[in-house]
Image (cartoon, rainbow, N blue to C red; front, side):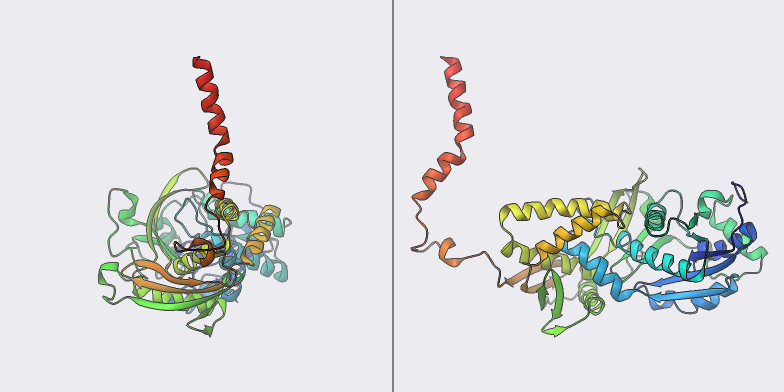
Length: 409
């Protein structure tokens, strides 16, 4: 069952979801390492049914203890909001719903491991995915003295059938069946779906793929509008009512989901080199992203906005690649926070059948000045000044053309 030397551990903390993989890992760790297993569960806003009875399920699998941490507010405030400030979009479309949750989960897992006196942590990520890198890089940065056990990279089991058989042999209950079609990950920011018909890129995603958002075709026939208040790059009020970060994202999820907002179907480049297809539903996050960019249009000058767009690419790659606990992230986040100091104001959002529009926006820091841009008469701008500006702006092109003419003579 084990492809490496059987090192013994006293106590291992397992990142536990209650699914087939982690339910199998609990007895497997005990049998192969002779250790006590403590399950760690992170509440990052996934469906409540995913957490119901999870402590009993962990103990039924052989864990001596199950620690559940409520990370919902911390997750949105310190991770989601920071990524939104930076404008992070991986490969131009993905709002990092899975990737941005991993550092807060890994940080809490490490804290539990240290508090419990564990000598190792374990996770259920496979050797093909991104999460193994994200979890293990976080452990290396936060507690390098802890060993990391990744069963999928070292055990002999290769299929769901083998995992179910393993549990059945030990009379360990598991509600998972062989009929599961999709692989899903959920938190308050998003739900991701892989597998099934999505494994063929020529297959259109069926409605079975989408579990959170209403189909745009079936969304209400009347547009829905609401006002958001933004302070220092964070959405703080909905229709004048102050909400915590988690409360805000939850409320915007409801608005976006019923109007069919936030669906994407992409084929992305995984960190390990292969491509994977995934469908993401991120209704509230999509609204926040558009709201912040609308205020940026008012308050950031041209070169500053270009810098923010470059920052977005770098920040997204950093998050996706599992490099949150690095000096570079601290530097990029400091830049995003500095930019966000000017991102203050209000926007009115209109949702309609999968579409999102910012139909009104205003900011006390707006650089939009009617006196300068009006097509009517004004006394603040001399149009004649533009001639000299254009002559200097186009000087390199003018010199190149003159040189070309001289060569022909």
